[in-house]
Structures are given as structure tokens and as C-alpha cells.
Amino acid sequence: MHDTSTGSTAKPSRRTVLTAGAAATAALAVGGPALAAGDVDDKKLRGIISRMTLQEKVGQLFVSRVYGHSATAPDQADIDANLKDFGVRTAAELIAKYRLGGVIYFVWAHNTRNPRQITELSNGIQRASLDQPRGLPVLISTDQEHGIVCRVGKPATLFPGAMAMGAGGSRADARTLGRIAGRELHAMGIRQDYTPVADVNVNPANPVIGVRSFGADPAAVSRLVAAEVEGYQHSGVAATAKHFPGHGDTEVDSHYGFPTITHTRAQWEALDAPPFRAAVAAGIDSIMTAHILVPALDDSGDPATLSRPILTGILREQLGYDGVVVTDSLDMAGVRQKYGDDRVPVLALKAGVDQLLNPPKLDVAWNAVLKAVQDGELTEERLDESVLRVLRLKAKLGLLHDPYVVPGGVDRAVGNLAHLATADRIAERTTTLLVNEGGLLPLSPASHGKVLVLGADLASPSGTTGPPTGVLAGALAELGFTTTVMSTGTAPSAAVIDRAVAAAGEADAVVVGTYNVSATSSQKTLVERLLATGVPVVAVAVRNPYDVARLPGVRAYLATYSWTDVELRAAARVIAGEVSPRGKLPVPVQRTDDPTKVLYPIGHGLTY
Image: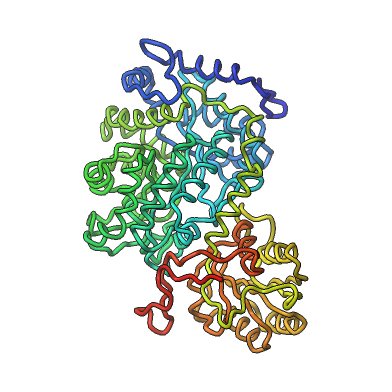
């Protein structure tokens, strides 16, 4: 079924893939046929484990990146990257070498070009694993949070991100997002999604979570986390609540440093714990750890990922969670600063982790775990506990019955018109109108026909088809406005500001996108100069809603919480009055002159 000359996967019939999947796992089953889809039988799973070699058990605990669009015939640049990182050429060779239990897809690893290609890559990975002696299906994962973090782009359906969903406040919409997004991932062979973000973002300066969080109210975050979990898992995709025990109150990005959360135990119970408790109550399949220091929970100085008091004492024993625990990526500074890459995976397993995600040096990590068992630091029984949890999840998802997906199904499931229309309607319910002095909005082509659209042409997340200024201008043009576009960047120079002011003089209105405006940002100067022209100015905060506090003279201010197409198109419809804004702030916006005072509280949002 596989053409190694092209790397393409043939279109097997449904009967063919069912037979292939069942036959591959039947050889492993003890005392009967292969597990049926969704059937979790610990006796049979333990039978599978008893037949595995130690090396195979170690491999089941690792989830690795791999480069290339094909499991057997990647491009030369990806072959070179695989050789450099792993000493192999392809995903198939990587799986054969390490007997991996999981693979994670990234855009930058060239895994996610388009839905049909993703489907063929997934089938190729499964075939490579099942071709091995005692081969087991691979659990394929990705970070498809929506909003600013998406690994699978168009034509897949892209939804508003978490903070936008928090502004919408609808459990039904969150459940629908999970159900549709899960169905599309499932069709591409991706069966574990590292979402929802369960962190409560109580720190406006948080550089790594921010709009990836549903908001600052633990109860509201809990409701939406549980709803998304239900939606994803109803579609046969394992949801993953992250980042335990809570990454919402930090000013350090754990990709580049080692954050400390200074909450007391009581504060943690009140602020950080509720969404994770809600996820556990909703039957969450996996929980991701955080590379953060929480002295109130463990005063050893170790990150939570390596903390037995946190992962076993609190998560397992106190919260009663017995599902899969996966680390955040092990290539991040937060987990590497105290220990070397050989010690981190061993300590994580000792703490209670089951899946070791994306170690920077897979050979070092894999061999370190193997040696720890051989030397007696880790027992094989401890490995068996985690392998059992991983296999339980694969069995629940039906992977042990049929790991393949039918390529033709992806065209019907991914990005269909009904899904796209649903995403647009949800986005309209999240757009938040923060300021509308004198009823400036909505604008109409009759009175404000010529619109200048300014802002930063930001690096595009997968949910965008082009620069945000162009997307917003295009959406306004479709609604009858004549638009001019000008990129001004996140730090416009004096010359750029002068050109923008001159262009504003030829317009009936200006729409300017703001991006994380700071006290010293030249974006402030740009907006102030535009206001001085007397031309009506509408500002759109395309990431953090806190921008509004730094620009008090703006008469109309919207928050979209991201610059993805679906949110910018919704903002255009709100600006034009095609729909009324319905979003409510899910975080408070503090005053800049006195951060102890609130300028706009949680729940603020205007309409017309």
C-alpha cells in the first residue's frame, strides 16, 4: 500500500485498514482477539506489556518530533535535519530505532502542509510502527489550541483562541469548538491535542500564557475547560489540560527561563487548582506539566515537571487523577537549568510522569531511562505503570483496534462549509467592544467610505491567510468600504508615523491594530498623532486587551484577542454594524497610573 518512491500512501478501503490494524494488534493480544475500538481491558494490556522488551517499554514513554511531510520520503532538508538530531533519515527509521510511543507534529518540522498530506503522514507513521516486531500504534499529537497557537492551518477550521472564548463565555460554544476541532484532527490521524490551557491568567505581564488562557476568573475558566474537554473527547481525541499546577501568574517564559509562582497553598487552591479539578471531573485523558517552581507546593527547588510531591502527591493522590501525565517539551529552559538532559527524563518518571515530550537529544534521554532501569534507579515495574496508562489511552481511542485513517474522509471532515460557518458565528460572539464614545461605531460606507487600515503585519499563526492589516482591510472592503492598507509595525519609526498621518488625511476613518502596547511603545505616538488629525480612529487590540489602558483618547476600541482570520473578519463585521458586539472581558484591565485600581472589570463589554 505504500509507494516508497514518492512517499505517498495509497487509499486503502475501510475493510483493508480495519483488517490491517486488527491483525497487527491481534498478535499481541493475550487470551483472545485484539481489543475492540474503545475497549480498555487491563488484563489484555498487561499481557501486551509482558511480551515487550525493556527497550520497547522505554520507547513507549517518548513522544518525539520528527522532520518531514512523509514517513518514508521527506525532502532532503528534512532528511538532513533528522540525521543531525537523530542519526536517521526518516520518521519510519526513527520509530524503528527507538520504538516510539508518540510523535508530535509541528509546522516548523514540515509535518503539517495540508490535511491530505497530514493524513498520509499519519498512516505512514502507523504502518512503520506496526511493521516492527510486536509493533504498537503510535499516539500522534500536536498543539492545536486555536487563536495564536495552531499547528494545522487552513483549510482546517480555525476557531478563536481561549481568551476570546472566555469573552464569549459560552460552554456550548466551547464544547462545539472541541467537537469540531476534534473531528478534524481525528480525520488527519492526530489523536492527542495539547489543549485546553487550564492556566488562570491573573498576571497581565505574563509573557507565555496571556490570551492562551480563558481568563482570570477560576470558576469561568473551569467551566470552559470542562466544556472543551467534553467536546474533544466526544470526537475521539484526547484532550490535555495544561500546564499543571498552573502557569497563569508569572512574568518569565518557561521556554527561556525558570519561572517561580509565589502563590501560597491557599491561593493555589483558590486560583490555580479549580480548572484542573474540573478537567479531572470531566474525565480528561491527559494532563501536561509545567516547568515552573512552586515553593508552596514543593520547596525542593525542582520544577513541577520533576516534582513527586506535586505530580504524585497532589495530582495523583489528592486530585485523584490516574490518566496520562505528559511533560511540557523537554527542550525548554525551565526544565533544563537545574539538571542535564540525561537526568531530566529519569527524574520526571520518578516524579510520576508517563510521557516524555520532545527531548532535545532523544538518544541521550532514551538511553538515560534505559540505564536507570538497568542500574536499579528505576524499576521495570515503575515503567510498566506508565506503559499501562499509555496503552489504556491508546485502547480508549480505538488505536489498538484500528490506527489508520481513510484519506478520502479528510476532504469531507476538514474545513467544510458548516464547520467554517460555525467558527465565524462563534467569533462574532467573542468580539469585545471596550470603548464607543459618542457612538462612533458602527461605521457605514455612506459616511465613512474611505478607510485607512494600519497596524503591525505580525508573524502569521496558522490561522491567518496573510498580514492582519490586509485581512482586516479585505473584510471591510467586502462590506462596502474602500480601504487602503499600510503596515506600521509594532515599533513604528518617526518617518512611518509621518506617512501614516499623511495618509489619514485622505481617509474618512482610520482602523489601527495595536499589539501589546507598552508605556514606551511608539505605537502610542502613532495613535496619538492619528487622533490629532481629527479623523475618526477605531483601534483594535489584536492580542492583549490591556492595550486600551495605554490609549485613553481613542473613541472606539475593540478587542479580538488574536490576529487570526476568523477573529479579524468578525471584528470587521462588528465595525460595519453587520453584527452587534457581544463579548465581555474575561480579565480585568487595570489603570496604568495605579495598577491596584481597575479601569474595566471582568464582564465589561458594550454593544449596540
